[in-house]
Length: 459
Image (tube, rainbow, N blue to C red; front, side, top):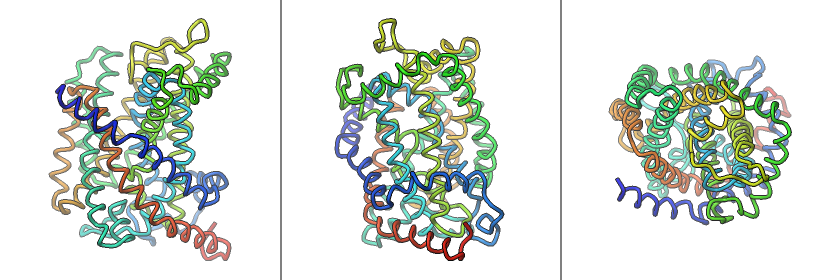
């Protein structure tokens, strides 16, 4: 186990080195410029499409797709709003310092443009499989958008995505739940693993429609519960908000409070955990976007874009601010905690909101992680069937369900390292494809706006 830890430490450090950080943020910056800041001036419209759709045909049965815009968003959010928002933010703050929260914000702001671009390409280049279901995502827009000579990159993405699903999708989630349940209720990880495994098997056997249906109920409820808990803490401790936010901004450029005192550490963990949380650039969310019933690729892309805003700008911000508030010492300095991950968030929330805070985190984490397990099963299955064929779907589901149980007994350090590694490897071919197909993204955006203006499409 120690050897595996060392191997993944080396590979993860290489994958998440300066070139990857530049590629992730740079892709978002380039798309932001090409799209003229679309994530800012169209955010309101995008949120309306997601939560208050008008009575129009784009969610009707007369359009291609398997699920509604809202169902696609909830499926994507079920996979993104997970332990990254609780355990991932805590890890970033402990290792990267308070400044890591700022770099998570930067990743999200530009990541919204990246997520938008992924959504456009996912719908435009999707295909119908032998079961009559939509199949899409980076492997399809690489293959269909860039041509057969790039197909090796499509296979690379799908293979990395298959492996990543067992880390970020199942093992990390079940591991964090087992840790939180043991801390709060003193229940052995094995029992938690059995319950999670059974509940996962029940839902994933229903495919994307079953997953979307479950996510559409679980995600809104769990998000509201967690956000309200965090806002209560902030409201009851308003005097600590300004010092915490000030520390986040100052440490983002000094790195003095970070472990090891390195600015690079704050940036690396802020970006890595930001991507782990909102998955912008990883290429996972467009797999769900491709299943949406829509009248134009851009409409679903706008809905997809809101996922990054809700995940990081809203949920992760609450976690990060509360954690920094709880870790400011009597002298106003940042006190590095002994705990990390979900345990640190649980203890901090309980300290800031006694008797209720810890319970909010534990319950939130359980539902966050469970929904993420469901969403990533769909992602991983699409990646696995792209590589091995549609007949491999049932085999994949069995192995995936088994990995949920395995995750409750694995080393947390190894699980996170492996997840970070495969997340980065997934992102590489996806980001390259986004840059090469940037003109297509811009062209589809112009086409959508023109059709809205002419009345050809509903507004």
